[in-house]
Length: 100
Image (cartoon, rainbow, N blue to C red; front, side):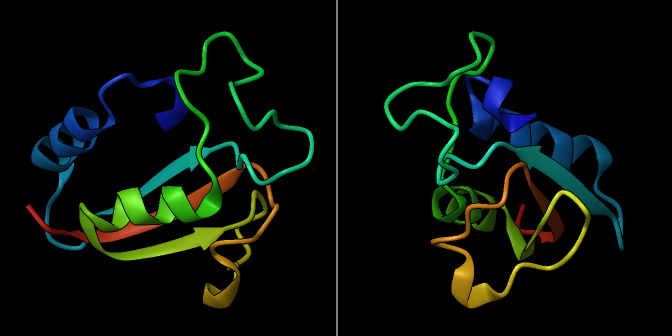
């Protein structure tokens, strides 16, 4: 969903402030710009503000959460050493321990 949001920083801040309680986990999805079917210069979907690479996506979420794990659409963990290069799409991020 984050690919639809103009101000992703405000979005992440807001969902954390509104919904985070001890033990809360957030699941946030996005297409992966590393995938060959996704254009590199602009989103294919006219409703997407921006499409992120898997590395960009992980870095953004890591600014707001202590624990971020990238998963495939089937919920299978992606090895950490593949976070920058994985082509799985969409990506699902399991996020916990908000930094706010």
